Length: 448
Image (tube, rainbow, N blue to C red):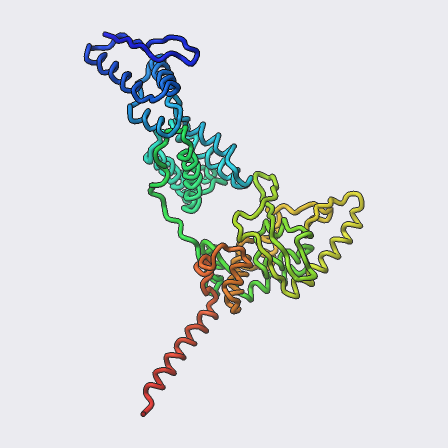
């Protein structure tokens, strides 16, 4: 059995028909014919009628099922071409990451997530057929890979350990960032009337929680355990004021001592310090303006702007740091004369002896070398920023000032992350509280 029905002519005015043969029963042919007629009835003008006819003709030619009436109606109401098909996940993510307005560092991070996780698992799926279970499968695969890496690392088989050497576990925080990439891309697709996507399947997933890590101090007990076992308590460790002072003494004879001193005292991010230009450094006013940062991506160095408005800020310098930077500027001028024609005028505060900018990873490596020589417990270079914040709060600096100097968007973030972490400060607070209660109890016991 089969059917035949006249369709609206093409835009060029050419007549056409919808035909289908080989159906099993007369009832099946009648249902198909009625479905086509219902789709044609959705069009309320000649232009839309032609589009619906294009959809019907193309679908029959490719021997696919005609779309449901509700789907075609939704496309028409959304102003989309009813004959347009949703792109695949790979097509959409590739277009989105290439055309969406993003900082270059963010674009590369998104591209990495798309290349390593989403295209291998979701690439061929049509966007309108993407479901939460598909997305969940991506993160289940990530967890299986994490388990495999952990098992191999703990194995007594050297070959098993070698297979995963250099491989990194995707932490809960990393998984949340991976999910955020897909969620952002699908939200952009939802805003496109020509893409038939009704909801964001990346919004409702079962992922491990990623609570914000709270800094811990290298107390005597933790220091002794580290020296005994080599185990570093995760995830964010801070030096005590005495340990920080020991680091500064160890770094005192280094060419870039002023850089490390600035990081310790003012809590700049590594990229902010490496990318700091003299044009934004006002030593006569004891201040620096943070407007740019240098990031290192796949060995490329890129100059970016802060991700949030709060990141663009003015940092006030103390007198000792100001003097150090003045001395450093004089030394850099001497290096410029010594380099002669070989000097690269980068305009940056901290440079190599030839004037070229520092590579951020090299600064981290140099920091680690100084720490090892000083026999100090290990911390990351970024933890100097955490230390500066905690020291400021412990010294009684107003939290609003600390938050603004660090470039945090809210004081809530500062307070939640940098609650009192130094034992001596907490001890003083406990003694003060106990003393207040003791005085109150004594006063209440006095005879009236």
